[in-house]
Image (tube, rainbow, N blue to C red; front, side):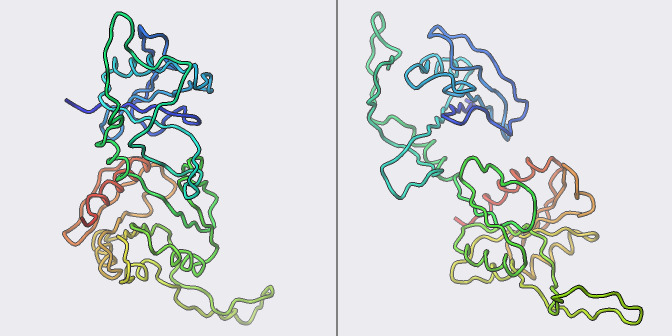
Length: 316
């Protein structure tokens, strides 16, 4: 049986971005009208059905949510597994807003709503000794990641900022970026995406340089810190390092040479002029075993594919 994943969105989660062939579907149920239509689609080939628990616009209170109709609607669509999201507080100080908790046990203290599909005319007893699925819980924990985004002087918004899962540090110079990365060196995976200049000026002027007809102003340069190589050389607690290279010629050869020089297990290389300002990209994955070109695709799906490839290469 193919897995069909159902996702129930809690407060603040009323839509699901990134699905292929998304479509809102109305589903009828003998248990009443569900909270909303169900958003169907696929993600990396996996069928997905998303249902906002409180309806788009948050029109149902916790007491009035038609829980039975919601579950029945997902079942009628063929859903085999359900992940339910809930926004709630905690008495644990170590849990900050935005943290995710995978629940493996709970006591149901809700009231003023129907709690079961069964009643007069159809009586059954369902064990709640193990109310959650350990297989899904394990998968959720393994897939979760906290992200520290170190961004140069760009105007791009923080991805998924509303989730609180991404911490952002903005820097102005290569030295600032090197220091910020150094403070985050205890990470598990390090993606070095920024195109940091190789050189910096060591004799900047504090005043405007006036134009002269006779001589050009002298400029002196020094190498900027090699952030990727420095991170890869962190022998005490080395993360899995992924480098990126935008080349203009000999992409595979130059990319492999850069991977070896940086001493990283994986490098993502592409032909830079073909992708700047474009929504699509085509890259090659380069590791110690060779070069593996990926098909051209939009950058969001390409990012997902790169993540999947990195996960496959992580040491056990």
